[in-house]
Image (cartoon, rainbow, N blue to C red; front, top):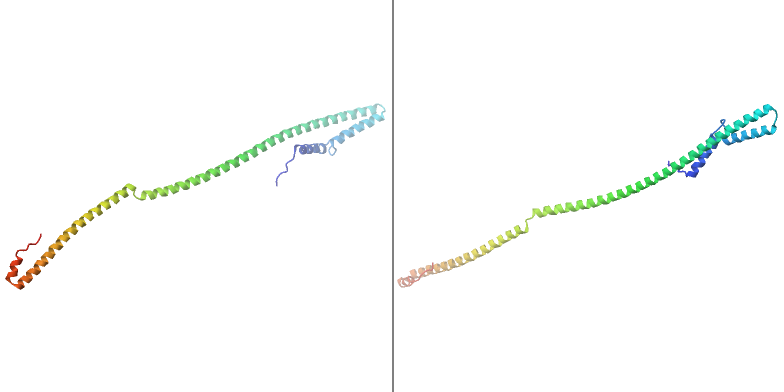
Length: 210
C-alpha cells in the first residue's frame, strides 16, 4: 500500500495537534487547559484577598503559573524547532525526489539509447553474416582470370582439333581417291585378264598416285 504524501502545512497541523493533545502536565490535561486553569486559580485567589495565608496561596499559585507558562513556552519553542526541522527535511526530501525523478528519466533515456545501439549492432551483425556467406561463395568459385584462361585453353584446343580435323579430312580424301583408283585398276586388270593379252598391255601404262 502506497504511503500518503502530506504537504508541509498538513504536517505542521499534525505536529501542533500532537502538541496540544499529548503534552500533559499532569497526565490527561491539555497544556493550554492547564495553563488556563492555573491562571484562573490565581485570579480567583487574588479576588478573594485575605490574610497572610491567602497571600502565600497567591504566591504559590503565581509560581505554578509562571512554571507552567515557562514549560508551555519551552514546548512552543520545541514545536517551532520541530516545524523548522520538518520544513528543512521536507525541502531536502523534495530535492531528493526531484533528483530521483531526474535519475529515473536519465536511466530511461540511457536504456532507450542502449536499445537503439543493440538494434544497430544486430543489423550490422546480420550484414556481416551475409557478407561472409557471399565471400565464401566467391572463394569457392574460380576467379575471372582463371575462368578466362580455361576458356582460352579450350578454344585453342578446339582450333587445333579443327585444324587437325581438316588435315585428316584431306588425308582421307586422298586415300579415298587412291582406293578408288586402286579399285578401278583392279577391275581393269580383272577385265583384261578376262579379255586377253592385248588389253593387259594397255593397263601396264597406267600409274597410281602415292
